Image (cartoon, rainbow over all chains, first blue to last red; front, side, top):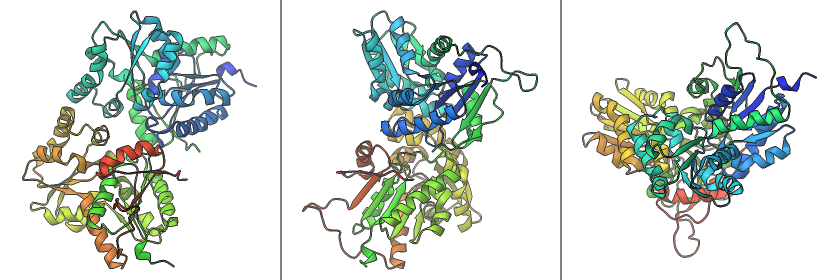
Length: 276
Length: 276
């Protein structure tokens, strides 16, 4: 049997957003090989029912295990909210979501205990962040705001458009009125809108990037299980590319083009696989 | 065997948009019973590959035939563009899409032959409207513009928001510069944005509503096949409700609430069915 430490880390999302998590993992753990799945045939998960999201997550998790991953990162807030528990029970490898790392960081940095969480309608309605934060800090007050248009605006590249600023201003106004001192970016797409959100909230509010926090917790988890890779993956041909294998369940070439901006790294190829 | 004329008409879409077509059919053919499917477990179809959309359309079409429909309306521009041909070949009942009726109406009303078509990225990239229009009017010049944010803006109820006007202004500017005299609303959601689009394009431009045109062609088709219903469906309890049975492949209760604004009619119940 080969050294389990050299196995890849499985990372999945309904689409592109989880690539911000893959990028953060690579930044923190450059020795690790990544196997990324974007479930583009069934994106978005946000408006789908918990049962449906669980079924999809189990299908992808099982496939990642077949591919020999040493750990699974659920790089999707909706899938974490609905499916982390069943996935942790069903999979033979450690499973990490994005909610707990973001919640932990928010509790660490807040001074007033008044914490905002922004995300898709599904993530906010699930109450997953509020539960995770209040489990750590029972006196915290959590204000969730759904920002359903942020994902399509980001995916259309309208990051600096005046319409995006108007919509951000509308979405974030309640959090400003309340006077939260911390805002969790509870959607893996949102790091790409970080500047717009920061400008709207002002410098006195700390933004928590779930992607970076998840990479930090993953590093601790792998160390605890003695699963950290010990050497750099072999470069394919002299130049060191990001050691990532990317799989999409539909339209892989479109996904490849979009993925480059999320990874901020060129990507030669995206494989196609249908999950059933 | 019961009278085939009293069988329902099957109407399907990836989600809510096709309800504007169902509503237009009811307005023109109030005697007809409708069976509507919204494939909310797999919405949206726009960014999915032609093969995937064809697979989904065949699954839903087969189920509608099992339910005894006398005709199928593909009330989704993406599914019409990718799957109308295979569906027409595979189904034992007449199948009608939304592209041909919209294209026919555009050719009928244009004076200059300069026609704009707006739709999702998938519909515009498919070139289906341009082909359908130029088959009828080879000298017409068709200008397609993808408006990918219109659907999420409509589904968020932001129809009169300043951001929607800014985005509409950006999307439609090329059509204004070119000076088209006709614009086809090539997405079943867009009738809900009709006023914003009309204000942007100005009174000299005629907007073609594919939903209304599809209902008109359906009426002709049913008459030709001697399939028009001859009597009103029995009212359930005194008050005549819209004679429509609505099925969603995920989150039926959420779908029911949203569907009422698309139908402009109260809806008691949405059934749940998973298509495989």
